[in-house]
Image 1 (cartoon, rainbow, N blue to C red):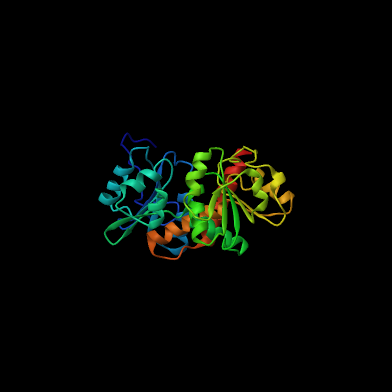
Image 2 (cartoon, one colour):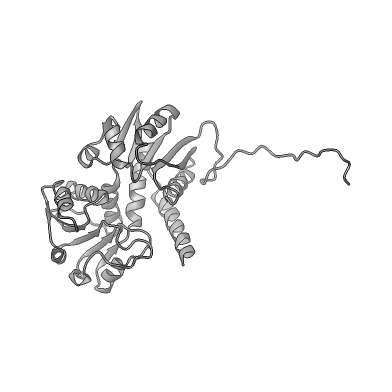
Length: 301
């Protein structure tokens, strides 16, 4: 019955909960990915699954930061005591230039994808290349040591991979790119690397597509599949879709394949360990990434 008296709804005071299911408290440590765009980033899903798996009072979010805002983002990290940052396009070079303390990899690549605290100092690192090598070792049980490798592309991801391949003992690295000057710059990162033509793909033990060709609904190939051999491992850093046109072409000739999801998870795991000082729960991170991609691909279809 209406009495004319105002009725106030009772609202229970329950703590907000992030994607990892744990309540956010005054002590929750915040980590973020910054870049533009970031709204489709899988990093929050991957890291929050790891925090939940280990019962850590941490939360991972995404902040849209446009080009030119990298320096301000670092200052905000210092002021707000944000526990760590992952950095994506277009800020990797900007953060590398702005941060005072950086690893040898960042010095070499002029690209930073991870900022973490070492005591009271912010350190810039790049986990992309080692993430690829770790995924290769995890999925196929092999190291680049002694291998002949063909890398397609000369952008930031390609350069990080070339550097990591060199540090992990690759014997010869063919760099192939539509722009010769970019290929020369990328090849200059390693004494084992050289600019090569597309037909030299057939000489490689490991073939890596480090371009965006084949991403999303694009089914085009970054190379002529006639150059592929059954004895090769063919890798694609594109992870959406899970099976790209290149990987299907490689399977058709009997080659082993490596999708981009592994690199995504392993570079995230390396960042996670720098942020927290704790070993990353790779299985939980992989499950979270796989479920997120499967959900996305169902929506697209």
